[in-house]
Each structure stands twice: as C-alpha cells, then as structure tokens.
Length: 115
Image (tube, rainbow, N blue to C red; front, top):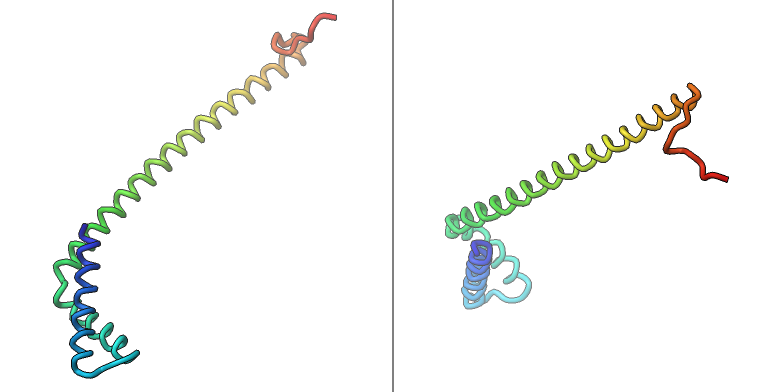
C-alpha cells in the first residue's frame, strides 16, 4: 500500500508542477523536462515521510524473499546431503559384495536365475 501511495503522490506532484509551468507559458518538451526535474526536487522534501514508509515496506518485502530463499536453499542442501549419503551407502554395499565374491562367497543379491 505504501508503494501505491508514494507513486500516486509523486504523480500528483508532477502533475501539479506541470500544470503550474503550463500556466506560466512553458510548452512542449521543455515543459516535460522542467516538470520532471522540479517535481523530483520537491518530492525529496515534501514526500519524505511517504518515501520512508515506501522504503520500509520494500525492505520488509525483500527480507521475506531472502528468508524464503534461505529456507529453500537449506532444504535443498539437506535433500542433496541425504541423496549423497544414500549413494555412498549403495557404493559401500557394492564394495562389500565385491569383497565377498573375491573371497569365494557368492553375493545373495547377485544370484542368477536357475537354468
């Protein structure tokens, strides 16, 4: 809401400055450039409170986004660690089965179908 309020007030200041300059006889592209410049300067002083509210709202929003991204990264890291641990276990079991075969003991999991 603060974003919309600040934007509306900026546009209102721009419109008021442009109307005043138009009444003073400024026309065309010069009117646009001068109105944007003067309204920008006025907004610095006149809309200070609204700009601070806008900034606080934006900061809150960005903090929320960063927190969600950090939580998602932590979840993804945990999932990857879990997958890596599962792959390591499978590799370790494969090594043990290979050692059994070398020792002359058949691995029960690798039995072939009877002929």
